[in-house]
Image (cartoon, rainbow, N blue to C red; front, side):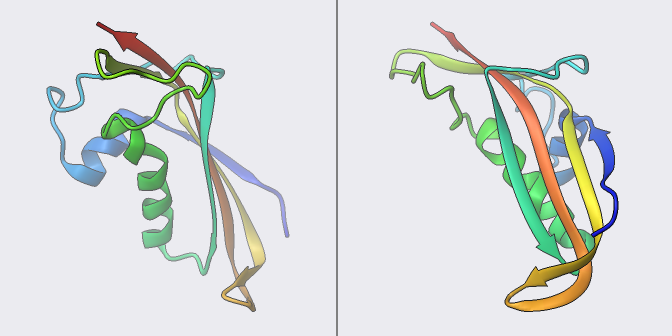
Length: 124
């Protein structure tokens, strides 16, 4: 495997691109472009043949639980009387190109790791 490439993505723009949601529909999410450490990180990894679909799918897996208010800091679980609000940082996308294992076959492709810092707030 070669060297990792690194990119940072705006998660709000990514949410709008993936699901076509409006600002009102994601008003429980605030983006802080300077946040690089949160209460926890959402991490997802994939290896594939380089098809853009798999990259977009991984982005969706990073964001899905935030959009649907299903993610929280495990040391501070929510109860039924609170609403969850999130502050999220940029999605860090790290990609390396080379030989990868996909379904038991060693093929030319890429391995991607995506990580996003999250702060989950409980609002009464």
